[in-house]
Amino acid sequence: MLSPLELARLKPRQRRAWKLLELLEAQTPPSIERPLGDGLPAPGEPLPWLQALFPRTYTQPLAEYHTEFWERVWRMKPNQSATEFYVWPRGFSKTTNAERAVIRLAAAGFRYILYVKETQDQADDAVQNIGAVLESPEVERYYPLLSQRSVNRFGNSKGWRRDRMRTASGVVVDAAGLDVSVRGLLLEGARPDVIILDDLDAKEDTMRTTEKKIRTITSSIIPAGAPNRVILGLQNIINPHGVFTRLADLCPDHPADFLMDRFVSGPWPAVRGLEFAQAGSNEHGRPIYRITAGESTWPQARPLAMLEAELNQMGPTQFIEEKQNEVGALEGSLYANFSLQSLLIDEPPLEDFEDIIVVCDPAVTATDKSDSNGIRVGGRLPNRLIVGLYSWEGRDTVDGMLTRALVKAVEYGASRVALESNQGGDIWITAYDATWNHLVQSDDYPSITLQTRKPRLEQVKASTATGGKRERWQVTLGARERGEFKEVRGTHGVLFSALERLPEFKPFDIADADSWLERILSQPAAASQGTVVNAVTTLNTLSRLARRR
Image (tube, rainbow, N blue to C red; front, side, top):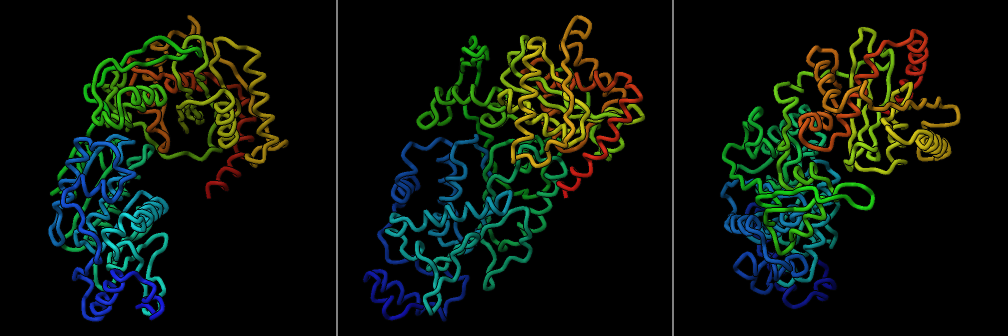
């Protein structure tokens, strides 16, 4: 396997291990465990083992769910099936522990580990991280052959690349993304005896995307494994119908009918018994939130003060979803008896629309203290049907919000950008013009040039004539109930989450933009305006479709 010169350069302990491996190479089939090297005896308990092999990572006591995870991983043995899923808060070391579990399972005798992420690039990065840890002095101290690359008789690496690691001990770690095919995965007659599923869901996954991921897992990933295999999964709940949401039995409308033997730990919240309240405003006039009750489930590494800061940075809605594993927990009453899924349709050709507009509800208004902005794009068809095309809600500067709105206006061929502004007047005109001029001059937006038609700015203002927020939301709900307002699949999840919060829970920005969208498009359009808009829309559609392809 090594030349005499290379063999001579090894330490005596490594040389003895290599000679033993050479004897086994020709007579030991891949399914038989090979020695991991003549290293120091490793600690026999999970926490001391973690601290010995990863001293810079495990500097804090483990949370309750970390301890449970490692105790169960510690008991796993080759040829003994197990299916286990762990639902922890975001930022509470899910991937860190999943990647270190690979090394523990390899040390326990597992030979072929398949590491699965949402995309191949993400999986490759995870395997690269594992490779870097394997080559650390601490791992080499206890498992010399596990930390070294497998080489052929000429001294060339047999597999230590971006998507595969092949160690001198015979352990193989492969990367796989749900966006690539892994059917028939086989290496020297062996199939993966460990499959790790790490962060498979995305927040914006549609129902169709989730179903596709489940088909890939059940028809490609699981069958690729050995008959007796360990399946480990870790993620936080970020999608109301996601893969892990179903596996954790949190989606009663779409229960998981696969991996029926699974053990599930969680979902665990970041703060047990969380209660929070608004405690005044900061110097920018935006609300400040304080955690008024609850305890951190990992107090040593994530104390309440740190989590309270994240609550204010992320906003209450995102904090509850990402940290508390409570997607859809903020349920309002307005849409409680309405099926939002019934609104979904496929996107009509843009040239079919009479008019398309962009509506913005900025965070910097007199009546809305939310820390978010809302943007909606929608159009009206000749049969008077209003169709929502795009939704976005999030924090941004005024320039950032206007940039996003104008880029979308050009992409969809919108006639105008409507902006709710109960104050500001000419200031908004100045900001709008400045943002457009920047886009025209910038090389970052090739679709916007001096020849591009500039959507006109229309300011809309709430008044006694338009009614209050709740009144406007009720009118928009009525349009949906009558079948006059539909929604295109894509970013609908952002809108639906906001509508499900109404009218009790902030932020309200995208719901406000949604109500203005319906109000403006439901008004009769001048015939001349429709003709002009159709011409502009058709031209912009061509470039948009070209970019999509």
